[in-house]
Length: 342
Image 1 (cartoon, helix red, strand yellow):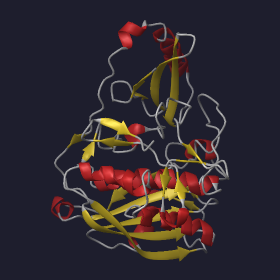
Image 2 (spheres, helix red, strand yellow; image 1 turned 180 degrees about the vertical axis):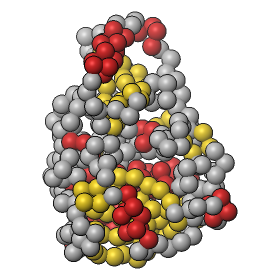
Image 3 (cartoon, helix red, strand yellow; image 1 turned 90 degrees about the vertical axis):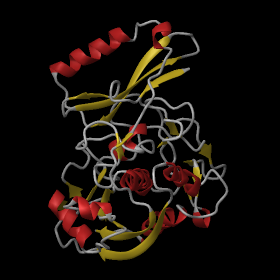
């Protein structure tokens, strides 16, 4: 039995240094154990040492005191969401192989495909439970920038500038994808990607706005941070990594982060949609369910997922062209729980 805590009360933020999810789980020897998984970069300090000491003491609390789990609720803040037909434009910054590009494009196209469940489309269908109905994503324009026109070290303004190259305006999302040899401000230290918008007025936001997403390939820089569970994590329990379903740890990790950010974007595109906590550091549709991929998950364990009998790879969603993907849990407004596909 696992008692997992994901609300603001129990997803503890130690200033800017620490964000972890705490779980108490019962093992076969009928004793309760405490486990934690960081969801942002930690800076070790004496305060963090004290914090872990306190957690260890908490682990001794009796199971009777831990019976009731607090519900996870993402409040709707009355802002515009991205609903209806949405074009997804792709900016490829740096060198991606044709195979890598096809894995990502096929994933986006699979969001509205007809494969048997569990599928990418059945995962995405949960976004329909958010106010306003369906968000139908369609692959739009693509731009390849293989010559690194802004260099190999990017800042936040560079990401916005790159997204503007294919800015479709209203009813669009521009996705900037950076290659494995490109460093980005905050990448591997406190984020694996991000989303934002160019909206400057509430009037534009009400009409849909211009949203963008950035996701980096962490294969050579921090696979344990941004491509878990396909690589051993930097912190926490060190279980064996899962086999990536498309044979590429970096790109399969990008799929997890892209899926997270697309769902977060359509449900909270302008910082006034669905989220919990401060708008500058919110828990959103998928980021509120960190580290959960299958039933029975807990920190350091992705949960029970499907395994391909031929390749031994792990997945929980089928996509177009026989593709398989591992997708994270998404918060379901109808049940106020993190929903997994398997």
